[in-house]
Image (cartoon, rainbow, N blue to C red; front, top):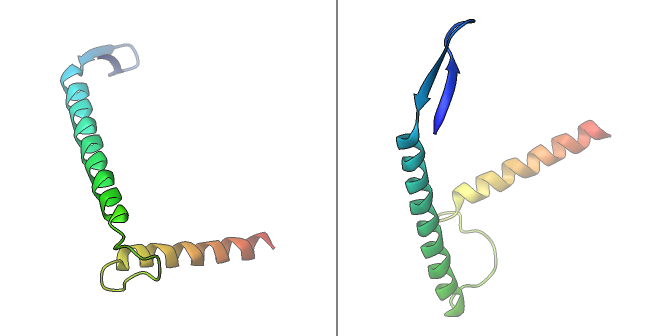
Length: 83
């Protein structure tokens, strides 16, 4: 990709960023493949019948629990502001 970047009020420079675009595309494909593999493994575990829905594990899912609590508190705060 070629970008025109303004350097001063009267001048611009052309920059070729093909290498950066290719690296970004390669990284995107790597992440997509990782996500696909994770989803397939999760589905295998779900099909095995081991998973039971229930409360979050405080030792294994504390990050998710923290996020959910913060989100709930923010919703309460937002609702109070709207009233």
